[in-house]
Image 1: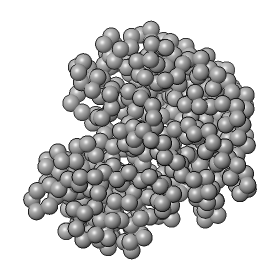
Image 2 (image 1 turned 120 degrees about the vertical axis):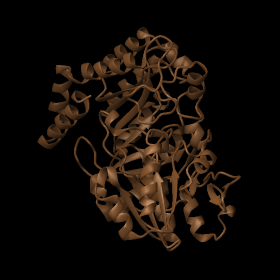
Image 3 (image 1 turned 180 degrees about the vertical axis):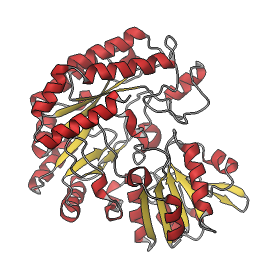
Image 4 (image 1 turned 90 degrees about the horizontal axis):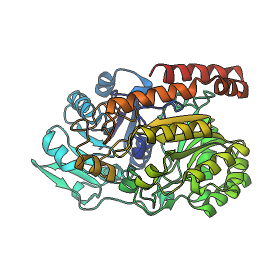
Length: 465
C-alpha cells in the first residue's frame, strides 16, 4: 500500500465522520458541515506507515472525483458511508475503482460492521469492510502482508470472504495520532453563526445508558473511555498554533458524564492559557452548577441537550433515564450562565400519538432554546428501536436508503409517517418564525456578519423544508 484515497463520496452532505450521528445536514437547523474526523484519523495512522494519503470530502469541496481518482492513482480507496447512502456510495465506489486498474476498494460506517459478510458476498467489486473502531486498522493493513492477522477488517480472499474474529476496541484513546488536519481544507468547516473555522476533537467514547434509539452502545460499548485532559489540551493548542482554529466541536457520546474529568479538563485549559470557544453535548441529568461554571470559564459557549420529549410516557418507553423537570432545570441553568442552548427532541416513536407530539412541542416552546431540532427517530440496525419497528411491522420500506431524521422511516402505531413528517415541518417553522425569537437572536448577535449568517441559514434550513 503506497497510496490511499479516503473519500466522503458525492452522494449527499451528511455528518459521516461521527458514525453515531449519521445525519443529513439538510435535516439540521443549526449545524454546518463537520470535518471528516474518521478519515483524518485513518490518514494520520497511514502516514505513520509511510503511505501517501489524500482525503477528499466531495459533498463539501466539490470537484471531479473520477478525474482526481485517476490522476492520483491510489492502491486503495476507502469510502465513508451512512445507512442512508450505502447503496449510492457502493455504486460510486465501483465507478471510482474502475478508473484505477488494480486498486482495492473498501467501506466503513455504522451499518457495515454488522453486514460485512453480506456486503462482500453481494458486491463482487468490494474488496474489504472496516469493522468496529477503525482508526488504526488500515495502518496495520499497510504494515502487515497478511490481512487475516489484522483485527477489524473483513475482506475478499481467493474468491471467498475472510471475517476477522475480533473487532478492535481502543482502550487508550490517547494512543491515537492526532487527526491529519493538514490534509483537509479546514476553512470549509465553520461555525454556522459566525462563519469562523471550526474543527472537531474526539474527547471520549462509550455510554452506559439504555436509550432504545441510540447507536452509541452498539458502536462504542457501554464503558466510558476518556482521553486525558493533557492530550486534549495539546491537540487544541496545536490547532490554534498550526491552523489558526479557535473554535471546536467536541465529539463525545457523553461529554459531561464524568464530573471529575470535566473539572480536570477545564482546569488544564485554564492553566494552558487556551483562548478558545467550544460546543459540547450533555445529558440534562449530568449538568450541575459546578460543571457548568467550569465549562463556561474554559470557553464553552454552546451546550446541546438531548431533551428528546415532553411526554413522560415517551421518556420512560425510550429508556432515556431523565425527567421533564430535569430538562427544565438544566436549560434554566445553562441560560443563567450565558450558554447558547441547542435542544434536541424526537417525535414519532412507535407508541406515540398526536398528544405525545404536542407535549413535546409545548415543552420546546417553554424551554425556548436558541437552536432546536425535532428529529424523527431512525431505527438503525442493532438498536432496540430497530427490533421494535420490525416486530410491529412499522417500517416504511426495506431499508433506510434516502431517508434521514426529517423523513420518517417508520410509522407509529397511531400516526402515518407522512403525518409525522408534516407535523415536524410545521413545528419547526412555528418555532423559528416567532417574532420574539427572531428579535432576540438578531439583537443578541455580536456583529452584522452574525446577523447575516443567522438570517441566511435560517431561511435556507427552515423555510425551505
